[in-house]
Image (cartoon, rainbow, N blue to C red; front, side):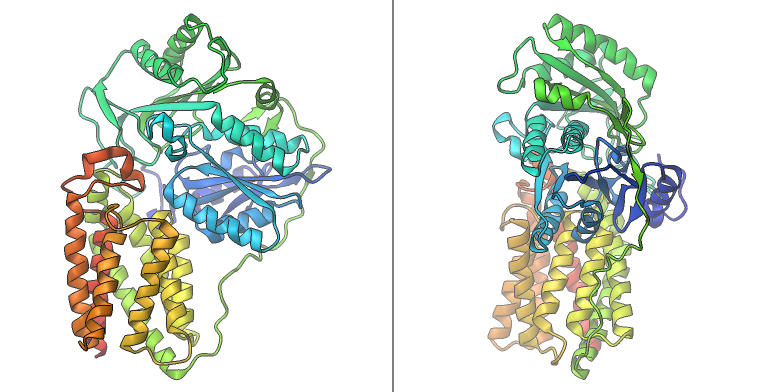
Length: 573
């Protein structure tokens, strides 16, 4: 388990501070992560990578000449917010465009896409290449749904080398996609990982068994088998990966094998496995080139390994072997660098507190009280939300909701103290929830609060009609933002009946409190009914029917929030 920390909620901040202090030769801190502390003689395309923390050396350890220009660092196992992505990209940008690259996880896709849109609006040419190397997470015919694991290193390295050569954004993007197309990975684990401050691992594997096809966020494996010998494990990994040889790759082609330790399987064990990997690849007629054995994409203390195969062609061969110099991955030597003069980090996107009507300021105080109550409730419910999330997900929903709601409550309180109206208070709260909550739920709750605020405004009193319209905007925004529909086993299954029931009951003349109570009951019933659904989106999707019998944690937490807000509305009546 993770034993060394101060305050678990500040673990990432403390870790980043130490990393920057130890790695100033390569990186400097900015809001949301780190960027290079040096530049070459000519500007290049900026390669910005990132995701949740807890995977070192991914992502910050891969920032430096010849590799990434910046790394966005979200909370533990939680995607960074769009604000953080944009901040790092702006700091890394050298005037020739930005390539964003990250593992293909729902929260990352939401936040990075939102940041890409904002960068494009600001005139920055920005592209995205998601990493989809994990063969266990979707069928071969649905590669676009696969998640990224240790193949991140391959795509980042190829893109960074292409940028270092001075290629334009079109070519950097093309080569990153080529690297992703020719990379395949598979992971196994003997035990789960434990987050800082937690007492239980995110998942467990029965004694004497091994999980096959796991992710890097504490998700359970797709399958379980008896623990094999090192040689038999190597055979399982090699045979499954060779069976997925990329289109156009010759059976006797050149392959870079990357054997990756996920946290607590250490180097001597990895080398025992690699001896068999090397032999099996040779027996298959594959030419092994520049093998890598070590830790490249970890998951805290997870006991597991993954094998990645990169099928080279001439372009990829040149770029894979090009020089690079980062804290965790180095090849050859890189010369001609100059230090970047440190400047103040001015990426504060927090909206200023503008004028507000007296009635809207009174509504903002109710907003702040409601968010305080929600944060207190989620502190109590975090463990249970994490438990149900562990059934088929990564187990961090409770922690993410807890951190996001605390940040939102604090931000709203500060805004109200400064005289904010309802819209501005919710804007600040939404931005804070997205920043600190991270992940898919962080993105969605941030978007919901911002859209609710936009409907309420900063001038007028908030009546039942305005509140219902705001809840409707929340529903519409989330369905558009997250692309989920009713029946996908997500938060949407609770949001839709809540918003629709509230609208209908108010239209029939019910008082606000009565209508809200009926709508909250509808949300609760719908959330519990998700236990009978099979997940079709998110990390739980890869585990098929495993979540049957367990309600969706996002739907459950939304229903809990509606009941908590009802209590605050009753106090204010």
